[in-house]
Length: 492
Image (tube, rainbow, N blue to C red; front, side, top):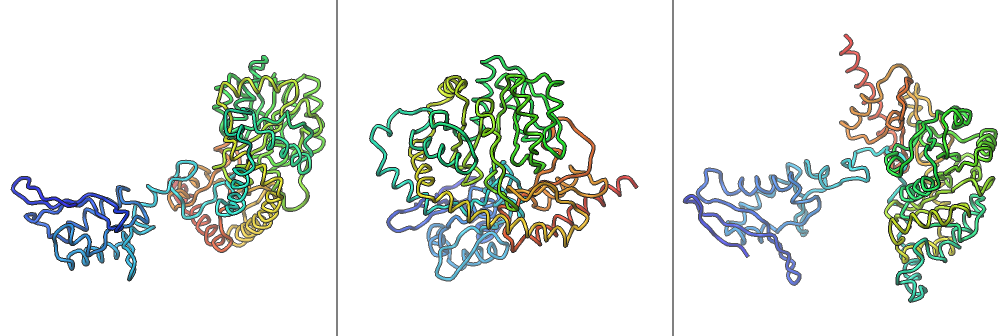
């Protein structure tokens, strides 16, 4: 309910936010002063406008009808009608005949505050961020059905504290699936279920440190989340790449005990480790008694030919295989898996018990059901068709708008590696793109050792609709030209 009060000789009428579950009437926190110089209508406009800008009224939020707010503030309805109309004209409110007024989904300064993405950045007009799947394509109906089946079939004991390293039903399903699709050689008991690749990598690194490892070779450029490796007690040894993948000949000089690689589709360059280089790496592992950590993050998405098998299949006792549902389904699931050599299983188990007591068993059962029913295979077939079309649309748009750009790497995964001509400044392009509402990454963000070279953009296409691809690339082209122009004016 509203209430009146006086302050500094002026009378105010205030209401508070309240949603009645019976009448669905709404109240809004607004204080008007009848003795102020500003008229009542502009006071209402100013306070609603400020609330939207501050994010206390979020995009899409319902607000009182003009009749309700007028009654709450004890003002005439036309005052509120005029205030709402002005706010709608400015883009703050959405007004429809017969519908409750709402804060506009594109209200100024509201979307950026309320729509925070996975990387902590405001949602962009054009999203080229790599390594993120099309979240709108998550198979909701299939997941709901799998969850329902899980709740029906789960034994009562599995609702308690059990299987901290993974439910047997999911381990068995993964052993079958990984063997069939990726050629992985393992028993279900070698699989450890984790809360994603990040946790799996941390567990493995700590287990290796406990076994005496001191230095880990990593691809440079590579995934730029190195802090957890250092926190586990390992020193980083950045190893460069060529067209065949990681330079194995540099491993001895780096004096490393283990290697982290992405052989099926190197991130971010898009290189596939050649057969000769795989053979050389495996020979090095055997000679040194070392371990490789294989990150097989998006190997299911190959569009030009059949995917190459997992490195683990060639040396199961020297390679720890890492997979995740983050790229195939959605990062929100927080389910990953390790296939651990027999001699390291106990060490990884010990580290996991120190970290937590396992991943949600209900979701593990649901994911196992997705594999067993064939829903995962069907989903992946659908997504390959979609992602290939979106990649083709990106390549076509680049050819039309930026013909001087060169696309490198294989036709696979969720992003394209695009090398620009000339002496473009990656950082300047990144900043100008962000200013224009284009989200992307550049190669320099993934380097440990800075290197000179042509500016290289990492353009994810999974979340970019084909219909908007050309416009997005055109805006990116303009951002690059603007960055060049700014650089030229500084030199001049």
